[in-house]
Image (cartoon, rainbow, N blue to C red; front, side):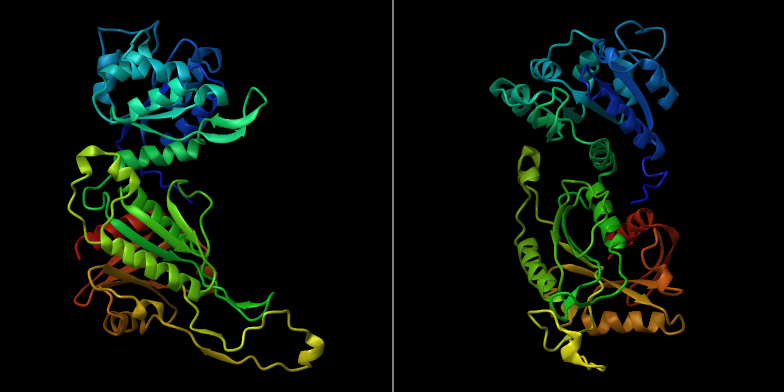
Length: 422
């Protein structure tokens, strides 16, 4: 997924780096944050310098690194002003030792002083040997931090630096990046709102090796789900294809056929209307009593109009079919028309190549399928499928607004702004 260079524009992020072998990954995290437009400052423990030099971070951020040796009270280069400057404080990697000290409000180095002085939500990405991360005391410390305004990014299981395979490896820089983006880009309108997104072209079997489908790449749905994730929504992405750079904790359901998509979509709509809050929401005490927000459905999937009337359970042999083969098709179920859209705001997606009649067809879709709005994409030709950019006309029954061509994530954020006004 193409990450816009202005995604984190004007956002200020303080990155804490502790003494773990995973410290080298923090350089990649800095690169991702700065390429997305954020201004980054780094505070390092003395142990972290054994793995990565301050000069490396200064070269990437164009800011002086704060550490135990260079704190200054004649300017803003100190643990108080650094916290006041930052929109977000993230510690990646966070060693078991640092986690223990954070949980007990110990501030015996510059990084810990910054953490203790920073009053807002802090994000930490632990990194430790399997036995260390699974030690009951470490687990207890993480639980303590989870209720003390810290968000913990789960470790991953892989081969560790100590050559053992197990849990404890720091999350990948891209995953930490998305957590940072979600924290600083949250929008009260979308936060904890249940939203369903469908995407990709459905796959309709002819036999065990052949199928009917279309050129839809699923990139628009993946970008839309990512934008909703960044805005704080409780997202469920139901799709046949997914972008490889999706946030790992974004909830996805992998489907193939339109029948399978219909089944999961009906269940998801039913659950969304019940108004159950997500596990992550329930963990935040102040939000337990939230009034349920009206759910949204973005139907970006390209569902096949026709399916094989007699799909075969085994491979068809050309020797049996002969020189000519007539494949009988039947009209497929219209998923969007069939879904109960009461108490859920629904936005359809329509791709057209007939520029002259595109708007008319989109307006007909609002009437015939009972949706609240349509995102119209007028394609030049089949080569437009799978591109990283898009141009959308956001169409309501009484007006239309152009979202200019841009990368699909930027377009998705614009779609969400229009969708808020429905």
